[in-house]
Image (tube, rainbow, N blue to C red; front, side):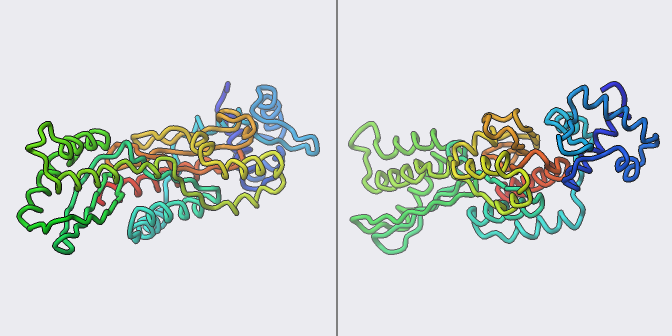
Length: 341
């Protein structure tokens, strides 16, 4: 762009088109925005923007609409992401803090994100293979029945009931609990499984302990359950009804993609740490058939670790500043909840 005035005109066109869903003309821009120039000047700027490929004229209207290139420049030149209001922050905190477990946290996050953005919200469950063991608890329920509780850094909790052949004393259970936690506490899943295998299958048969073997093997089975690695939660599909004018070109392909979780995860992209929000517009995505779909996404996880992705998907006519702010805010609160779990 050669000057800031044309960028202001482009910004006004994007904002009006997203809000009104109608092609934008020069007269409307002058009336709605304090551009400080005449309609003739705005028309000249629009002609230049069109020549450079930032806006285009639908064949049925004299107004203009942004192109993918125009949306990209608009997003790239955002000086700041629109901050959430204090009321919005309180609402997010109150809604998410009421969750009782990981499934509830993910479900609430999906619902909240779709409500804030009026788009389709997608939240990937924390990836088990990247998580670490936070704690293992062994509880005696009966003389020969134990409850094994595995707590991961993702907030995920796995429980296993274990029947043993002989009574287990509290002293024996305490010693085994200490041994297991010393081996796996703070260790990533892959290495924790290796440490447990060493407990289950010691180098010499003389040191083999049937109770320790049973406990270790049960915990390995719990850690090896990778069902959540490609598990996602989707909400707000009904929001696509707002885009009925572009059903065949934008909505139908997206509805089909929502049925294929592997496709949707690839569309969302890799989880990014450090609060970085990524925006992929139209043909920038990995699928040609979704060339009229945009994605606003970021990673989340305890601390600075990105264990999974969350975001919104929808037609390119999207409120990018608002969506970026909502995605970032929900990811921060979700990360905090996992960190405190």
